[in-house]
Amino acid sequence: MIRKLQKSLTAFFFLLVSANVLAQDDESLMTYDLAMQAMGAAEAYARDQGWNVTILITDQNNNPVMLHRIDGAGARTFEFASRKALVVNEIGIASGEYGQQVEAGDREEIEGGVTFAGGVPIFANDERIGAISVSGVTAAQDEEVAIAGAEAIGSASN
Image 1 (spheres, helix red, strand yellow):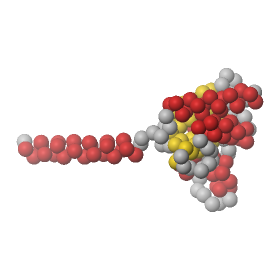
Image 2 (image 1 turned 180 degrees about the vertical axis):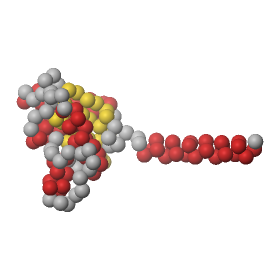
Image 3 (image 1 turned 60 degrees about the horizontal axis):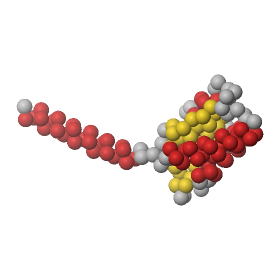
């Protein structure tokens, strides 16, 4: 009976410590308010250009914080925006830059990632706080929208 209690307490202790460590590592640096500001700027830019896109904002751990799909955006735009954000959050650089490195043979491909532009990191106070990725027009145009959003709350490069 005592041995079973000791095992249970030990397991509980390890779970508690693990949860605390994971919670610290997973703390989101992208707040809802920051995401709102970035989304507003990105969406305004896209609408000014007449572009129907999907815009995804994630935190640095690739957790979605906000998603907008402008009417008329293609059915697969969410999938591509998600895959661009994955690349940005895995390696901390723009998805277009990642694609150039893969093409040059300087970097291995990330499973599930894409090699074209449209996803950029968001930096604030010299720290990467998340990513903004866009899909729906050309890769270069997607990146323009993403940069407009990133620059509204920080920058797209460090």
